[in-house]
Amino acid sequence: MREELDAPIEYDPIDRRYALTDTTWTMPNVHLSESELVALAVATRSMSAVTPEPFTAPLEKLFGKLLEALPEERRKELAALRERVDIVPAAVSSKGQEWVEPFLEAIRDERTIDMRYYALSKDSETTRRVDPYHLRFFAGAWYLIGYDHPTKQFPLFNLARVRHVEILEETFRRRVFSAEAYFRNSFGISVGGTPRKVRVRLIGRAAKAASEKKWPRGFVYRIESDGSGLLVGQVSRMEDVLTWVASLDGDAVLVPDDILT
Image (cartoon, helix red, strand yellow):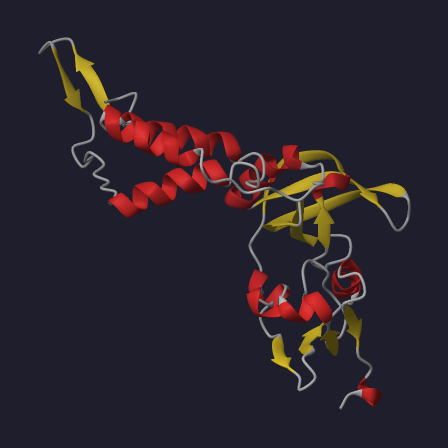
């Protein structure tokens, strides 16, 4: 029990027995329904390819512990089910996963970090002192949002460009911050700038498949009389929208305000 359930048990050599050192401790009692077990089995197997590091191994270990508590017949059923569903990740992912755990530790303990960071726009390394606030995984890459001491802003750092990290003993008092508000006018990961309305007309295969999509919050899609579709929303920066439009191979085009009908 001490090893498997982390129970506070110690041996009493006088009474020659084991006893709880914390009488308030209770044995965990987790009951999973049939549907919950199936969901967990499929999710851990199918998402192993898309779950970002460093969370893949702990997720597999957790599922293994749950399987050990089941009868052998049920273990075989769930193991077989896991092999029948998978999810294929994006073809290319970014580096930087090795910094996730240190950043998580710093976020949890609210400790300031010093890091060497490669600034792509300047083509040079910079030294940054940052209070880390939030991690986001998007399109195969990890990003950190934090309060940057030199600029007194909340920039977005790509973990693939981090060269060195030192977690300081110095703690910080968390300022008001909301990840939802930070990314409110983002089509993906690009933020900053004054929000502007964007309109994208979809035609061909993109228009036919539009009903299958879940659009970012704040975007509205409507079907036009000619069978095309119009996606309307606000973005603070256009980078992600332009990348997405280009990926549709001619089936999407930005619509200028002066020709919108």
